[in-house]
Image 1 (cartoon, each protein chain N blue to C red):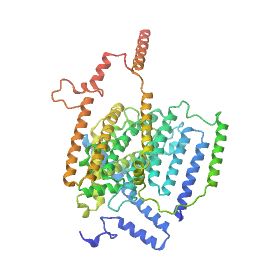
Image 2: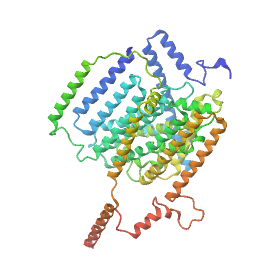
Image 3: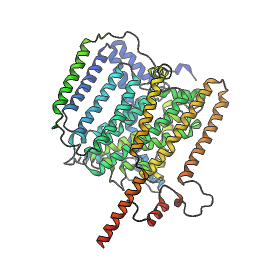
Image 4: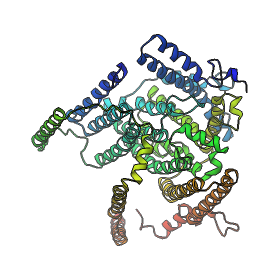
Length: 186
Length: 423
């Protein structure tokens, strides 16, 4: 990393990423925190791009910004009273302690690591190389991940699907209620 | 073709010559970072120069063509043939008051009209206007397109949520549900293209079509159809505009936006449609390449003509088809487009392997594959039509919709037979 452009890009991306991460902590509204989290994801993607890891950067946007955050937004929307002021909570002090520990660990590791710069040229077609190593060297972890995802998918469908008996019972109860209502009104 | 004209800065067929001259001139006296900044700025200005005027024309074209499809006149009062209508619209929108609902989230309400513009402009960066006319030839271009155009949903969602309006929120929820489903179909369509061409660089896909001397829509008709319909869903255009269905939920996610903020949403919708038409033309119609004509006619004009053709198809769909219900949309995506997409991913993988493994004559092998794929496409669509009851009936025994599982008379009759069973 040398040159004015690299430094400018790195520091602005770093400020965006860390600033957005701080914004998640201080915002009292869950949706605001979510927007900050998305901004932070985008900043991280920019940092990957700066490291010439185009594939990882694009996948970061595709998976985290495009999918995970939408999932989280859905979860927030389906949570009752999610849009209220979320500052007062019993988990405040345990959360602060946990955060302090994580920061301490990160700073410790960052200070202790020997940050040697890589002198090699960046790989030109990282996507091709990642793909080739996924189906040659790391085919077993890849397959395990595939099986895990399929199991998660099937499990989600099984959880979300109601049994036919349940549906019948539900409809019957609705029918009974409807008849009682109509009888009462007439 | 005269070689002396090639790649000079005044060569209109390849506008990248000008950009290269300027960048080299800056690099000759300035620092390196300034040269790259200038080259980036030229790309950005070029993109804006394409989008700005095109948007003004598109507003007029879209209204006029839809009007003609619906046997109306369309705008014809402002200027000759109504050509100044977009200017009048823009002036009106700018002069209008921008209302902010009292209970809206002030901070987030302001963001979405700006946010939606970012993906709409960014995706132009990977679109090749010519062999060298591309701002960034990423080797993950296809993924970049998917990732960046997918973030559009977030802006729409924020708009719906921040308005603090239930119709806006309905629109936002609908757009997310629909886009997530159709994005899968679109990813599968592009995966098929990537499998067959063996590259994720968008210019590489055009070069593959040039090298094999055929356009991909011939080889992969089902994939092209999936991409077209997936793009329609992603753009919230009329057959699939449940997110802003004006007869159901006022105006969907932009119900509370007025003045130029609404104007920005409207402009972005058109800009996105334009860029999706351009990518459809690039992936499936050969992009800037047209059987050697690109040596004589500027490649960007060829691309613009193809883009206009696809754009016309989009307007055609919008002008003729009624809005689909959400269950019809989901059925269509999950029961036709996604399974067919998976099937065609497998077919493309097999065909790619066959082409790589055996030294067949490609002028024979590729047309044979095209015929096979077309047959599979017809079979898949026919099977779907038969399963959902929308198939062709030679001698219909009764009203046709009555056989449909998607609703219509049969659903109405079922409701009439069991009035208390539903809801």
